[in-house]
Length: 482
Image 1 (cartoon, rainbow, N blue to C red):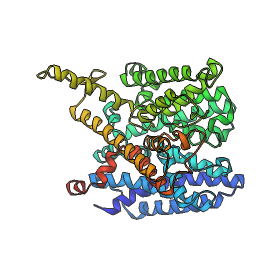
Image 2: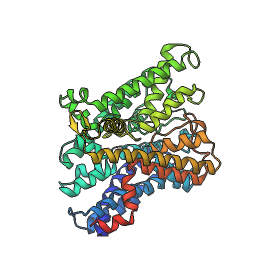
Image 3: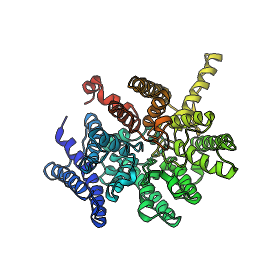
Image 4: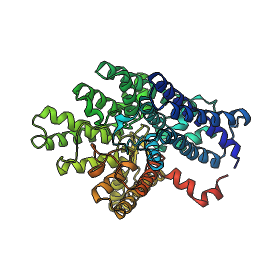
């Protein structure tokens, strides 16, 4: 394994972070706030360590599988490390543990926070906090691949390591072109939502930071009360629409922009995703009417926002869901586990795997009845490789096992069962809030320090889709990969 190759690509990642740190420092400078020096120091460190490998190490595109895997994992770790630096230097509630938690939560677009007073943060630090969402939402490697020369199989390997394999099955472009398309859709949606939110009553600064969090399906807000602070039905519905859009495969969204809207209309995954959200919203609205809200329209507004916020793994809040009826809690837990489509910025198991799981169940039942029958599984008239079916079922099994084990460990630390389970599921799914002490109007500050480190591991596992981390940590992998 050539460490100099890894250092060069990690340098590119540090430059990307350094650029956003510089922008954040400029915001602090113009606002004369207390985050200027923490952000400036972090920006200098990130830029210096990023530029040196580019100067002294020649470009290399023949990356091995092992090197590519290390680049992906190390780029995420380095980003989170550099991301926590401004928090530590600024101080306040940011101990090393809390700064690490906030940084990992930002980059993985989880949106869970330890901050009890978000509004106490200076603007520059708030912008940096939102920027970690936007950088991590599309994926650190995808940003880099979008600007690099064509890397052939090495680029494809890096791309596959960064995004869900389900994405590649439906997005048949060369790696560089695919990355550029994803970035263009990502940037376009962010710009469009920023403009609409600004015209809907948000300040330009809040519109930008909340658009970063929405399109990245992250959930960091600049307000303690999250979106509830604005008390605006217009802003709520604007964000609802963009949360739903951000949960759809970005390749399909690109097809809409290129006048191929039928691809979305014909996608069974998108149909299921939208239908599941619709049913969840209807059931939650009916459950909340009369018990929580006195009018159907009010119940629809708040129920739709919270169901879609969780169902897309965004994690914004307009209401306290703890007092809601038990049925709504079950639905919230379901959407916390499932989330949205592969190829979006959403976390969770993803709707694609849920569909494959049920199709696998149907196939096995039919095979019990007809043992000699050959029964293919297909989605949108495309047959699915049996290995993909097996991996999907395996992924769901490991995913739920991790949530279960984390829940046990948190309860052993003294956390109540509701908080432990929903907190584990929310961080694993990169959703943000759970129920109990980590509900929509609470935060993760009361979780023990060891629990916070454990939950950040969940965030990484969920964002990197488990297998990349397992492969990286496997001794057998290091022996077999060249």
